[in-house]
Image (cartoon, rainbow, N blue to C red; front, side, top):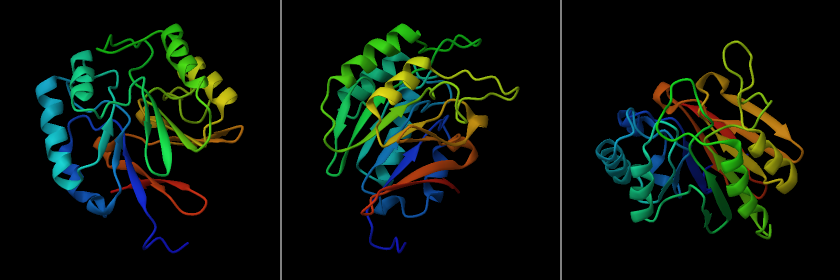
Length: 221
């Protein structure tokens, strides 16, 4: 496929404050926009995230983002104020829509934005009420359960069952997630292609290529 003039979006996850990597992304200025799946900061403070977003906007003016488990809920409010928040929202772009669910399930580390499966189910239930009439991408910081995208180093699956059930029922074309750095990879749930970006702090990211048949690619710097 000749990608030269095909529009594309860049997806970043688990930036963890490594904004110096933005300049290394090929054609970042030519992307139609940037989507951040969560864990923007290293400590997840408002000041840190504002700095990261300010740097990113120098490369591309169109950015949508949501909190990960590291980011404080105050960051969620900042994203709301900037009208770029994906968490609990549906964002319509020209060619597709993004449905966002941030944070993560409870972790042993007691990070700042952790939620129960019941919370995820409640949020995702609001998405199921929306008519599916265009290319749809679920942007979930927490991967779906029991896939190639939710395994930690001992091969235990720690993804979300609520996210899994939503995907099975709604069947978005893509689910893009992160959170579990070592589970970078892809899987398929019915007709849904699932991608764990890996952590951008280590140089990993993704690209949605809006060809006649859209394609998602896992990329590295």
